[in-house]
Length: 389
Image (cartoon, rainbow, N blue to C red; front, top):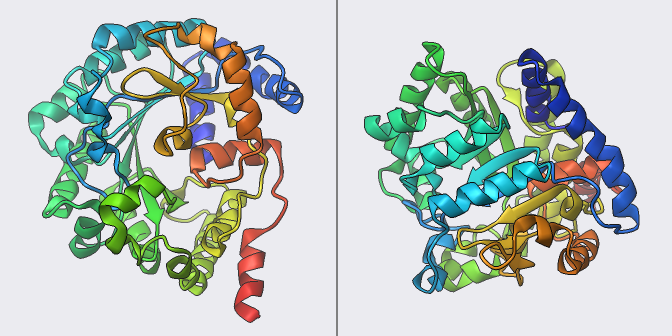
């Protein structure tokens, strides 16, 4: 189980939200049953992912969202439209929210969106690169209605690595200042906020896993989570040459020894319960080497029954990767209310398709899958054998 889920449970108990906790707990055996035979959903999603914008103030090598031309043809959902979607999700039993992008802080109405979700007394996390939090006005507005947690991307332990991977000269220095200010706000008791670091494991960051972890601990983060780099074919059109050293099969396999070393170190650290808390479960960490071996995910996928994802223009997908990979959407909330789509034949077909999918190692989805279906292979053991052969 992801450590963040344990935090949500404790917070619900402390906050007297036993009813919400029971409703979420009931979903898991129900989903176990309905996912076996792809039956219509009997409960709402555990996690509602809202991608508020594809716009971004960075140009990460592993992402093409801010470069896609779709924004030229369609307008992002307005504040009114997002609040209607949130109301629909909450009324249908949506258990929690994750706001992402692009860079969600570029939405001027993010505080209003957060306030609307918190009005439903539901947990909400925001994924951000964190740079805009260095701006005192933006940070103050953000903390007026703070999320339950903020997840900040830390892809590197130094300016050279971070600025290259994130396509933002000078970004590292701004990030450190922003984290310092945010942590200071939390430590003063001004806001009840979990501040988490998220790092993409790639040939560029693998040698720095220890340094990144120790840096995040010194900066005052509450936890850190890792996820292997995921190939998104459309990105190759923009950064093809630079990506040769990041996600080609040869580049990833060449890092196998470092992958094993990094995962073994993280597992040992987790066993010792010392230092900065590790967000990932042990099963997930043991699966990561499979991504560098070019193997498929080790667990059947149930995300279509547990999650829903809505992009900036209202298109609905069963998961975040399907949006990234430009798969056809299930429908659009501007045409059909989300709750009607959730129980539609189109969503049922999508669930059947995702149940056969083993293409991704996204932590939010694979961690859930591993709770329902134990891994069929141990990725760490497989990597060790590959190194010996």
